[in-house]
Image 1 (cartoon, rainbow, N blue to C red):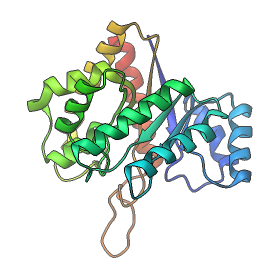
Image 2 (image 1 turned 60 degrees about the horizontal axis):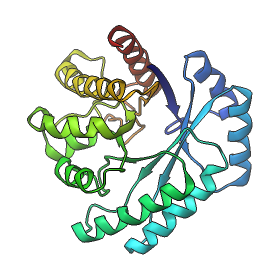
Image 3 (image 1 turned 60 degrees about the vertical axis):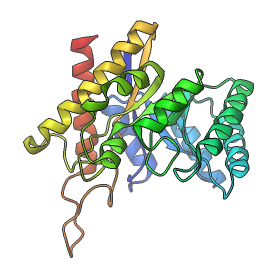
Length: 271
């Protein structure tokens, strides 16, 4: 099994024509991003990915006031995205405020849509969405055997206000269904530590890495030939800023690259 590391475009302010060569230089194999509505932007993205021989992970975000509207937006975005030949699609699904019945109806329908279109889809463990906590997610995994995840446990650390070693059996269950990983590090009071290389966040970093090791072991056991990872640290307000000046307390580019390099080295030493 090999590790393929993708770079997200969230927070990148430089023109893509300037930044894509830098992404290539740092060893990323592809791009993870949402397709914007502008045709010119989509064409530029496609052209640059071809130019730099990048693979693509698409992000979609369901929306609407009702379950039916979220289901419709899911299929609409899938259809738009398939044309870009994504390795997989990462979806922010539904709303955290839905009842169990509403969440179940959503997944019952979108899993049928996934089957029709034949592209791997990972539903992210994300705040504000259906799978915003471990226990809801665990119930859904038990009910829908075909449901696959993008695991981003930094959200759960924030929601639960603690590291998740007391929920390790749920982590293991998620690992069995994870087809994509967001390697961001959360802490008790937020979804993103300022800089994972800082010694004061050693405990949080090592806890997340333990969970990621569980995912890699589960994928290897299932016969995966490739594991995908995005070091998805985000810009302000995810990245903390100084009061008054609003200057970021760390360099987002450096943080993402540090995490990418560290996880590539760890993966190589373990797999």
